[in-house]
Amino acid sequence: MNNTLIQILKTDIKQNLRSKSFWLYSAFLALFIAVMFGTGITESQVVGFVGLSRLMITFMQVSMVILPIYVLISTVRSVVGERENGVLEYLLSLPISFSNYYWAKFFGRFLVIYIPVFLAFLGAAFWGMFKNLDVPWDLFVLYSALLAVMVFFFLGLSMFLSTVSKSQEMALSTAFIIWLFLVAFMDIILIGMLLKFRINPEIVIGASLLNPLQVFRTGSLILFDPKLTVMGPVSYYILDTVSRTTFLIYALLYPFIMGLIFAILGNRYFKTHDVV
Image 1 (cartoon, helix red, strand yellow):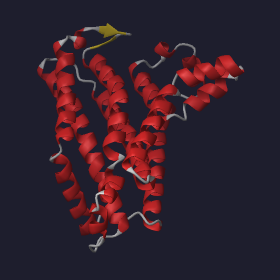
Image 2 (spheres, helix red, strand yellow):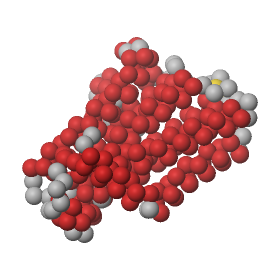
Image 3 (tube, rainbow, N blue to C red):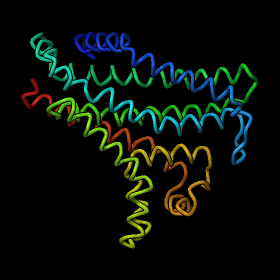
Image 4 (cartoon, helix red, strand yellow):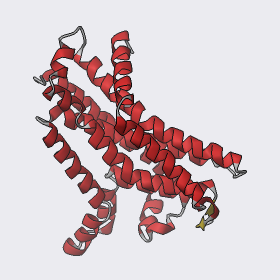
């Protein structure tokens, strides 16, 4: 990274650190971990998993709901908001390239969003060690990677929407509709398609695995339950088609690649259109 990008990155991070929403977000993650320990979730057992493994899967399932909507709402207004406030016009009048500005905003948001999640997760592991619990470090690394690629995907999508949207209201509305669609596409829409149109179940399951949220959900579950018993008959199709390792690689690469594509498209639009 060049010096200009680094300077913009530092400025953007400092600006985010002054935001009350960042500290509320960080405090919520820390409080959630504390509540899970306090309620004795590490002492319960599900499918043979107990201790920190049980806490980790619960944290992942909650993150699947919280992180996407937080990333979308907090990021989708970044570029379009600064354009409406006149800040973007002022910044781009300085000797700053469009790409430097865009990627500094992107990586700054990634660090601000992901680091609190990672630290909360890491804090849970260290607290488990203090409480003499076995820490499954292999699961910790894989879960951390899954969280990172999920944040990366929704961040790329958010930056793209923020660049192409004409107003903050349009950006927020579009982001919320997309989030609702992705959530509904995990179960409600797919079941409806099966019942209404009698579509081949394999086609429906394959389509569902194009949904990054569904990929994240299945990836976190396959680490927790290698046979995916909680997903019922769907597990037979998935595990008969690909191995557990192959699916985990897919769960890590697919959201990352999609997020990168959206981010690159957003940067391309930002450079080639009148965004001021």
